[in-house]
Image (cartoon, rainbow, N blue to C red; front, side, top):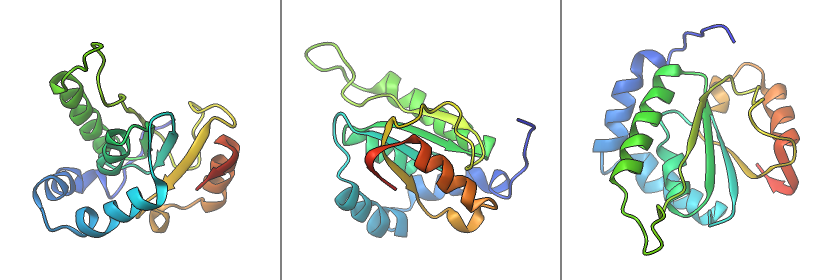
Length: 155
């Protein structure tokens, strides 16, 4: 894949700071609680967070037990997501069995219409949060989502 410059790359640090530090954000107070209510992420669920940005929602899904893979076209946002994931994994406490309580999240740089790192029919839920308006090839996005979703899976 050739390197891509996105408008989100230039504001990645600002967006990350806003999500981390604004306790009254729309994402935190409106979107996130409703996503958790609708999706009901839980242990054993496989979730693909398409256009995941810096991983804000991916982390919330994983905290609820889901196995999460996030991807975004912005390498700057994915770099921030990976950095935060590494910090979380090194700081997380271990259970009595010596295992991390929150499953690790895999983050990838990839356009929304191409997820070659996900096997066919292997995902329970695909999320696309606040992103469709920024994606050129919508048909490709839905084709890939359809390919990776298990029978009965949801987008």
